[in-house]
Length: 313
Image 1 (cartoon, rainbow, N blue to C red):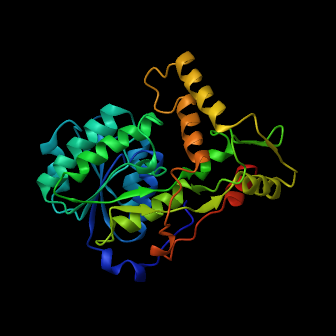
Image 2: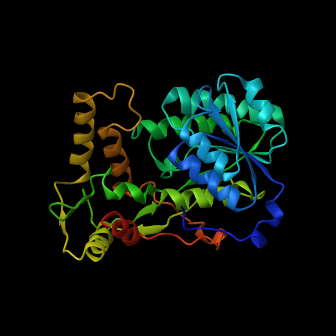
């Protein structure tokens, strides 16, 4: 289970807090539920119709969460579950139908129920600094954010950079076979990395914090490509070298070509989407500043080296 745990003495203030969590059966959602329960919160987990008997829903019940099967297309149904909640947290994942439309209905439900606070499903680099069209998935989050800013509710977006966990294989940056660290542009560009679990721990703390600002920025580690090289070498005991195929212009062109030749067919994270994300990070534009790591000092952040060492066994 997650490393960040909290004693009962730290949770008395939040013991009566009710948090509604949408997308609770996902990898991030289950972790958020865990950390909310560790902090003494009551969790009402929203799951889609037909999901009540799935293993992920049972895991939520084992944590002590209340599992509510709802029609995500019904504002009235979701509003009933949101009644009395201090915060509504979204960990939904998808494309326009989910990030814009389903979250819009969830937002309406939160407002109708009188919930004072809403945390959208962002958990990414700072898209407010990026030009529109540079990242499809982040464009959808920006679009929903504009609707959220017009709603009569206190909103807080959480930016965490890239999930560090992706460096173990899903993001082709650290190549364990040839022992190379792949990058484009400058090897000295600082980037933000936070594990899924640390992001969840930070989100749970923010959900129980009534005085959060519009944006919170967290990075488990700020690392350059050279830092990733050092971490991979230390984690494996084998020397890693840098591999630079070209500059950012070439990388951007490759991402566009990949998108043209390999349409996503509705995939949330096709290869070209990952390329867009890495291009954004390597550009330095969405660098998180200032960081809010200190806001919840009880959270111990996991380093890149620790993640790589665990992955390599």
